[in-house]
Image (cartoon, rainbow, N blue to C red; front, side, top):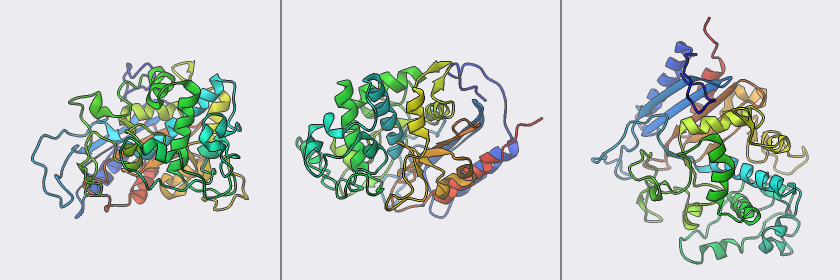
Length: 383
């Protein structure tokens, strides 16, 4: 198994075979169900920077359409380096990119959002801060429904306005995170993918993580997602699954990143280690604090029942299992992905699958995520 630091160069063994067998059994049971939960999946976990669990099942593509017609073309076995559409795990990186940009500009999250995107200077949105966007308290709707990929899509999006008074209620919002991506672009003067590349991916050695892989990685093993009839996209493979991000060109603050279990585990370890990687500070202490601690007032309307950091959820028992009791942070993705870690603790866990292949009308993975997390939480170092 790999030591995460030094870009995975050193190798040593630290594994609990009983736990690894349990995780593999869980994945295989889900994979071989009457209705398979996914075509492929991988679980990768680390303790104190050393990989302790590494299990992969299935292939990148199994079906040609939503009737589950068997795929007759080429497919690849899933590995820890297979690229998955990580969906809303993108929000973790967007939050980090925005906060890093603020830090470099001597700004803080309480800055008015309209300072960076003038469209939010309208009366209904003028009180929105960057912090509101990053904690899902800006009052925007959950989804952007006018997501057609044409030349005017960005202009239509920029006309969106909040439904609730900023700071009054918690409402999980992809819309708010698309705005957050625009803010990162405004501060840095770079496109969102470029600012993430410079501030996050390059310092962490995440050479294969990014947006729009079909445009940059011909032949890269990528897990397929949904066969979409409306919109009529056919089998989505190598292109973003999320309709809003797709309409905006595949680069957006809410979704669109593709990454591997190996590289996501590196990012999880960054959050676990207080923003440090390989001895270097990647996240300023205040940035790490915003990314890893609850920012919601207890009195906020529609409290979600878990803590809300900027980007990550804190102690979400619905899918973190017993890790929630230790204040673990992380996020899930609609395509069948999740990442969790214990800030200042010991463990990080990444679970990637393509549960929306070939249709989103499949398995709810919350129980599986929690069960896998519990199996890993009980890992003990062998004597």
